[in-house]
Image (tube, rainbow, N blue to C red; front, side, top):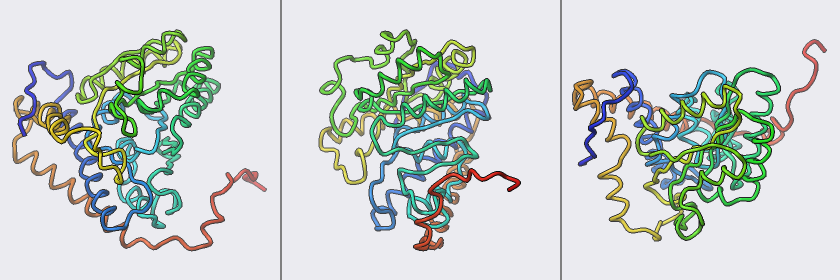
Length: 336
């Protein structure tokens, strides 16, 4: 692949570059495997892959600290892996198995991890945005210095509840970063045909919320913008908007043939803007890693992904009794 050549010196260490490469490659290989399992009938329902958008979550997780929260929509597998959730548990949940993060009852769109402060995975477009503001409200109330990353897409950006949330977040100076993952096609309609403003982040100006557009195919640019947004929120200045302009290589979901764009357009993005190839070029051209080093990383990632698939296949289907568990939080007194 003839990826773009980099002239700007990266503002991170060689070890960080390798970590970015590894983390993005894990997401891509995992999603490719998920696509295979879906084709085999082992994943049912909807399955929205993150292939092409890997730099968004990897860059922002590099700007996050322990205890920060994240909440997103249904294209969520990459977010889970980026925040450190176990690929085995994620794949088992995709296949509806007992070893999954929601014990096989949530599937692709409804996974949570209290340990990793990952609050879903939400299937209703835009519905997670006010929930993200609620998480940030709790942090402000508790004065714990934490920040919430609230992810949604360019399609969800046209939902009314998003702007109601902007208003409340600005009024209350909530420590929330609204991350617009603008992959340019929403569910299948280009931004030019669906959205009146070319830069969606500027809609925050009506509420006094600052923001910026970011190259979502460059993990270093995402990390840099993420650090700026995090510093803004942690200092008590209220919310911030990041419109991260990215591109998904697959359709909206596995059932989408994506006929609203040409194969040539997708291939051009892969050839010229691929985020993983960009970091690969930085590693090789800067003599931070050799071809053999990168092959070793790729081999390790494939082993991890294959192991997650085997774990999922071997994990049992949930018993019928599982339907009645985890419905309500345990609020009983600890010493009762």
